[in-house]
Image (cartoon, rainbow, N blue to C red):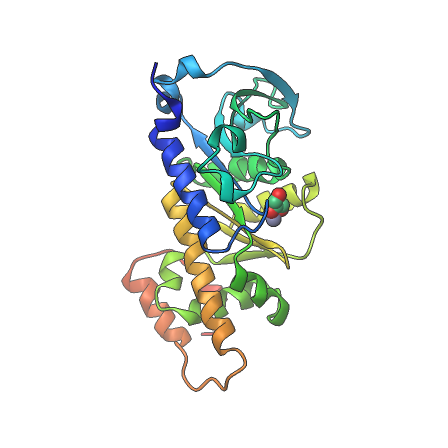
Length: 271
Ligand code: 2HA
Ligand code: ZN
């Protein structure tokens, strides 16, 4: 029987989560990640998968029926995931009714899925409509991104344009910009619905004064998106209190986006 703990998707997940912790994005039980797995990825490990519990997700995502997700557990610390993957992570399958899910593996200490499951599953459903290859949704509390929320207007055009100005690569890495939600109560279906709505337009959504949600085709790509936004926010926080004497101009950002051939939010530039 193949060891599921040695599966590439499991090693990738625990490594990414360890890096998120190492970078200070996920203090205590902060943050959550969900990774959509295909039947092919799971085929070798079918002996390890057994429905031990079925539960109501509390919301309806019919487009995810039959899909499998590797998901971080509620209250679990990212710091511990590499050492205790079987306790901190779970594999669930969304049932045919789109309202229930079965736990097939993990949460060995009796745990359950992240409290942010509504935001994750609704975001997966929204992203899959615009990008059928999307597989990952990642939530975390990156320090500088969060700090910036307290001193910068929480307006998505302004936030995006400021971040684009902070590093030359930004407009190429997130040409679709960054969506912004105001502070909202987390763990609810309302914040899940609001996040999913933004995810139709943006792969990155800031939860005002809380953190960020990012999505992508792979763990690496999604992590890289958070990392780039956080780097830009760091440059902003290092310079916001100093007189700005140089900047990347809007026309320069336009030429970057055009040179690299990305579809970008031209309406977010002052041209
Ligand atoms: O559970 O980050 O938003 C950890 C969180 C909630
Ligand atoms: Zn959070």
